[in-house]
Image 1 (cartoon, rainbow, N blue to C red):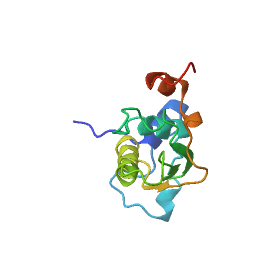
Image 2: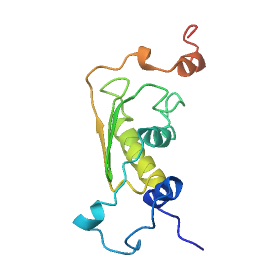
Image 3: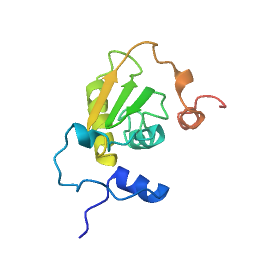
Image 4: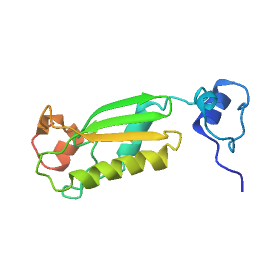
Length: 139
């Protein structure tokens, strides 16, 4: 079975670029870092939609728990929060977010997911669909 192509290979194919200069088995070093690709923020957000809050059954993006996504070559950083600092699911959801990104976007060699508390989360951050699903007014 053929090995799945990397994000860089897929983008080069779509954009009409040349073949990868190094085989996938080559060790990563400073020269190889030039081949790193910036993963689109929307792809990270899609990966995070697979992380569901176990108490309400809605993903962390729709709940408005994802505050920031920053992507640089080979690296993804996510700032996320919980509905309250005392939420017992915080560490679990943070770990699930990092794992979801790792599985969906293996090109992101460094994944940093941080729990932040400023600004405090409010229900206003939820999507209209999440509010409707919870029966909270007419979004």
